[in-house]
Length: 394
Image (cartoon, rainbow, N blue to C red; front, side):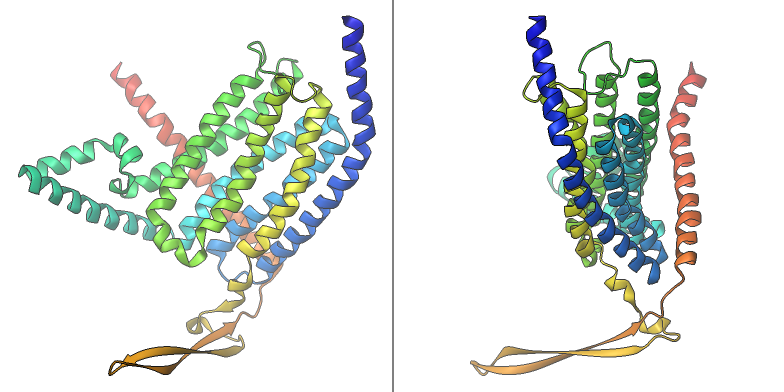
């Protein structure tokens, strides 16, 4: 029996050795394509950095592809760096999810505009709901409004549009808690690996891997759930940026790669795939290299820098002004007869003069870092506040 097991392990070793070199070459080529396309797109945004509030987060999101592609190639080339690369990927993945949430807020016009939008929507929906209840029961309006607001926890799951500005707070908390937990769990995995009790891909109770996986799955699903609720409440205002395409392309990277890793681990645990440490991590890294090339192509279209090549006419300083006239023929009904009519639409655009890449990078690092720090501190305070009140009561 032992001889048979040794023979199987040896066969897996031979298969890994035979496939490893071609996999590194193919994965490296796909990763190179991802790097070239992503860095070109990032440079375009840095060169035409005309809307810092939005573009600082776009650059952070797009930079996720080079990070994923680079660490996957390194891990595929030398499995000894696998855990270190996985920690880097996990930390940046959490930051990218946070950046996507901040990007949506920036596209609406900032937190103040978002709060106004959510509060207006809440008042409109609440008035409609109270009107429907009043017609059915004829109860006191103030009591009913108070009753609805008291069910804030239930409202988040079933009627999030009634929460108003609290929905923004919950969305930010969901994203930042994931960023914090993901980073802490990544370094906890490194610590457990040092003591030999992490067991990457092993679903056994005496290893840390299954517990960290459960915690991260819950945190990730909660962050996604908050983001989906926020998107549903604001998608009308986000329509000009085509948010669905951005949401799908981003979610495919963050969540598909995570569940892909968990799926490979489960298939290995149940014997569907070879239960061999190098083979398991190599499969995940190879697939990510292929996927990042596809993601980079998608980002070129989804997060294009072209809309930022032009400024509003009111902000024209020294840019070149161009006018584009669009003509269309419509059929107009007149005296029960359809007659053709010509419609002209003229759009005036101001070409942006370009910005310094150094200044753009500085704004992303300084201003973006300051915003992240503020949100992290606020989230920690929000988490500690209820605990302090509970301890005080005890």
